Structure formats: structure tokens, C-alpha cells
Length: 219
Image (cartoon, rainbow, N blue to C red; front, side):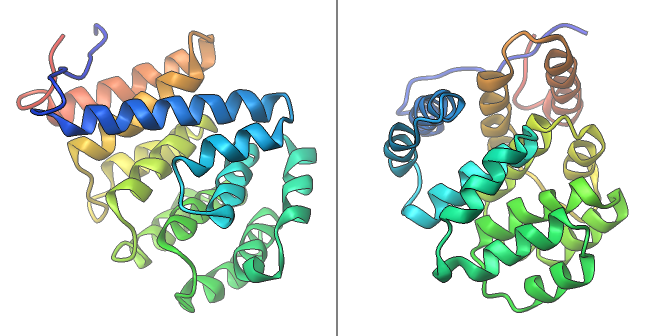
């Protein structure tokens, strides 16, 4: 199957394009800075995309988890202050495979939607597809389209194809073309042409084409 691409239009017809372009630039800058441990540069870039320090640290944290850079995960966890204890506990519990603690933290509904959406993907690293489905369906009313596409992106970035498939195809988890398009662009941005990632992007393409080709996609 050939590659598919999102049809482009001017920003007046498709305002999502302008938003995506800005997001891509900020994410690319931050990822490059993270690779070099240039935390100040990463922070500045992410501040242009997220609302504050907490979301910045958490976003960096989840990306590092899925790149399996454990020493950086530890470093970031040390940077998270006492005001983020629930989120920090959620990540630690997930990494330790303590699903009961994860469920209790999620049930308190004290966490931001973005945190919840990314966190259950951290749980996926230590759990099963069924666990992820249970958590996702349980909090599906608390996340936004952007958090959903971030979840797709993080699942793909970590090469968790089974969780990516779950997010795309689970009957109780809805997704939109815009969610998918945003995640797809972010994925292509960071994966480049490395063989393992390219096969994952192709998988992403095929699912998107099957789901939206009649309305949105073209060869």
C-alpha cells in the first residue's frame, strides 16, 4: 500500500494546519534539546506549546519513558516538586507495575486530563492491553482531542504497536480525523526514516487510510 498524506489547504480553510506547524516546531526543538540535555532550551520550546512548568516536565517525562531513557526519567522525577505529588506517584506506580495504586490515583480525578491520558500509556509499559483498555475507557470522558492525539503519539513513539492499535480501533474509544492527523504528523516528525519506526508509521498510515480514506485521505 502506498504512503498516504493529509491533504493540505490554506490556513483559512484548514486552521489545524497552522496549529500543527507551530506544534511541530516546538516539539522538534524541545526533543532536540532533550537529546542534548539542554533543559533550558527544551523548557522554552515547550512553554510555547503547554501552559506551564508542570505540563512541561510531565511531557518531557513521558517522552523519556517511551524512549526508555531511564536515567533521564529519574532526573526529571527529581525535578517534579511537591505540587505534582499525585502525578509523580502515578508515574512511579505505573513504572513499578502497581496497577492498584494507579487505579486509585485515577479514580480521585485530581489529575489533569493530559496527565491521565499520558499516564495510562505509562501503565501500558508494565501492564497488558486489557489493563490499558480498562483504564482508557474508565477515563474517556475526561480527556480532550489533544490529549487523545498525544496518547497516540506517545504509544507510537514507544513502538507499542498493540497499544497504538487499541487506541485506534477499540469500539469504546472514539477518535477523530484531526486527532489522528495531529498524532501522525508528530510521529513522522520524530521517527524520520529509521527502519523500526518507519514500519510503525506505515502501520499508522494503513489504519488511518482504512478508517478515513473515503472522506479525508488520498494517495
